[in-house]
Length: 587
Image 1 (spheres, helix red, strand yellow):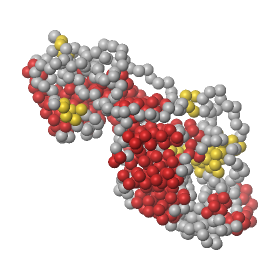
Image 2 (tube, rainbow, N blue to C red):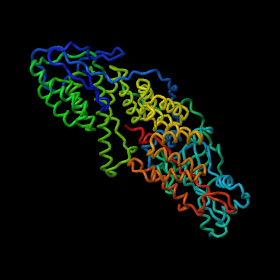
Image 3 (cartoon, one colour):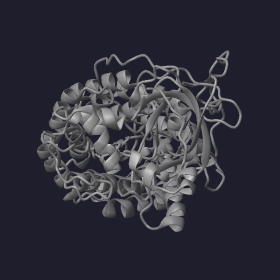
């Protein structure tokens, strides 16, 4: 009799008392040949006396029956070689988290420049250019703070360019007349820039600027700029991934076990069956004592150690889960499911410890995107997941978690490979799609991100596809396809009406299009959200609502329509990049 409990994919079964037909341990469907090495010693007393074959059945592998999914070819994930002492725009976008708060020199091409006069002319077609220029001279607050985009190449799209903000503006005609010579002399001088110029910009790499610009993926707060000559093209690009660690050795054959008295074995199995029944009913508080009784009766019952770890994992007790699953792996290192659960437990434990250390420094609710696990803390999890995949290539969750580890280690191409395999081995798993989409978009691979998100919306149950429609909307937004983005975000909201991320994104697009009624509706819903993960979204929504209401300190014009004789200020929506710290990427 087999039952399933959905606790991180926990597979639950009942074991028959008495003699059991020998199970073919160490094999899962479609497994490749692996190198045979001596079994890993168990962390229990050394075996004494006779040994015997292990007759406990292997745990059922967590695999999904599926049709083929045709995913995009994985890009090269390469970064341009930069000179010592300088950074490149894409490098900061994909490797910048550890550089937050530092002053940098960034070389690149200007791909877009904010033009206040052009923006006002577009929003106020009824007003002549001379009157607009006069209005700007009289009221500089009609304009946003100057800003530009910087790319690795001249044709880098805006969606893949770096945002440079809080740049100084030139003094107006009235200021040049009214200010003292010393004040004008001290005014920051900004060279005349044009799209296509190659420049070196000095600034602070941050997520928010003093003038309230915000981007969770990073922005450069301006300090200085100078025109430069492009360097000679590098002979080759450097690979984005560092050299990957060698794959660990894998035990493929079941080791012999210490002979056990039949009566002790039967008592242990009885407790194990009770534990599994409790897990199937999601009564984990009852399951754990039953499993512990099974291991006390017979500490060689690796199924009981595995079931105990399953219950701890379902409760998020990662320290206990890691310690317990290690016992099962030590007894049967050839079992793919044990290696999978070891990898998950040790990965989540490493993140928990990093979160606790960060909370001790920054407070009880640290930003998930700021969690940085030391690479050495991920070794145990990575090795276990690699073993799990070698023993069971169809274990989709192993591919997904190994992809997360590669992503945490800045091994992005390897991460894309594993996320791709996670989707191929389980096309119904939405988090595999989301992780791959976010990775592609962070690198500026917008077309690939759109294809993956669309495939996800086709294969994931419609009721679970809200986050994927959100991803589709953000991809269309990055391609400046506003109407398609609004339609996709509308589908996300129809599935999940409380999705603050989708409403913020749609509200931003309405804001940018000048549709103030729809923008206000979405943004007010975001501000009212009770989702604890929506704190940043609520701040951005409040900022845009303040601008709509004319309450922003930067706004001197309270009107939100642009059809009168007086120039209407263009209310540019604050930029809001969505990187790998987006909450929808996390389980």
